[in-house]
Image (cartoon, rainbow, N blue to C red; front, side):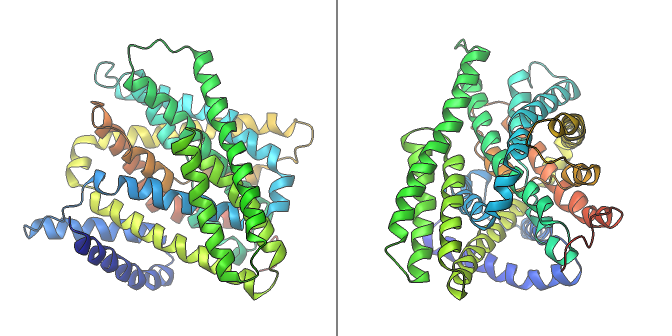
Amino acid sequence: MQITQIIMMLAGMLMLALMLRPFAERHRLPFAAVLVLTGFLGSELLLWFGIDTGIRHDSFRDLIFYVFLPLLVFEAAFKIDALLLKRNLLAILLLSIPVLLLSISITAVLVYYGIGHATGFPWIAAFLTGAVLAATDSSPITVRFPRLGIPRRLRVLMEGEDLFNDATAIVTFGIFLYIALNPNEQITFGDAMLSFLIVFFGGIFIGLLIGLVFLLFSRLFDDPIQRALVSIISAYTSFLVANELLEVSGVMAVLITGLIMGRVIHSDFQDERGSFVDNFWAFNVYVASALMFLLMGVTITVVMFEERWLAMLIGIAAILISRAAAIFGAAPLINRVPGVEPLPMDYRRALFTGSLRGAVVLALCLSLPVELSYWWTIQSIAFGVVIFSLFIQAPLFEPALRRSSLMGKEPV
């Protein structure tokens, strides 16, 4: 596809997203779900008229992983309430590392025995599926929390868990993918755990280092446009240095850099200049999310539902069961940890029902190499789970909240 065609296609998609946003808000529909449905129906209509869009899953794999993903992770870390995050950090880390690893294992077991094809879908395929589906994205629903008067602590818990879940899921996915691509290499559980710790905490170290460097660099400028440019440079620098040069967690590096830059810029600019930087990042994420979900809709095919509908249902059931077991089983134990503010039952229900799947799940399933015979099955499961999240979970979340005691806890 020529560059002129790509530019025209992206411009057309953004124009479409602009027109769809008011429709979604007016009918209280998740914007991402409307985008996916529009992309799917539009591409199927074109194919019915004999027009091939030319867009395939590998056409925008790098775009999502290297361009959109750092933007989404950095913006989420940049805007989060740093003080509340610090107060709830231990609970978030427990949910997003040991509890998430448990959830991945449960999902893998359920998917493996659900599909029941040891030759075509071996254990490593099941664990890859568990890692792909582990990353959560509550942003389509938490954005409405201030309007509903939901406690800020719940929003920070959900958004903070999303951030660290993404990092854990990507690191785990990388380890399982290496095992899948090197089946003859003997890799022990100890080797895998050591690799996880190096990649995960290596990303934290790089994020701290680059975040502090750009913190000092940003203090050279008092103009909000310059600060905004420094922030976006820091996001991509931390991701590429960690992920490509040092082979540690790029997402973890971006997360830490975003936390540092967000705290500094919001501390320095407590006026309209800070609002400009926030709006700059809101614009970036709007563009990235709109293009990503439209492209996902274009990539989905009817054949995927015809041939892999049962695998999709198995994947959906697996994530619901594993999430329920992880949240409701682990929360009582987390509440007993010294220094952790207890998680009330209403919070646990919100953490369960609000665990949507989105950008990171798409990025991971699209990065699967086609050399793996089961890549399309995993991708189909991932797409089915994201569709379920957007069209079933997201619309049902607000009615579930209204039946809880969480509504109106804080002034709107």
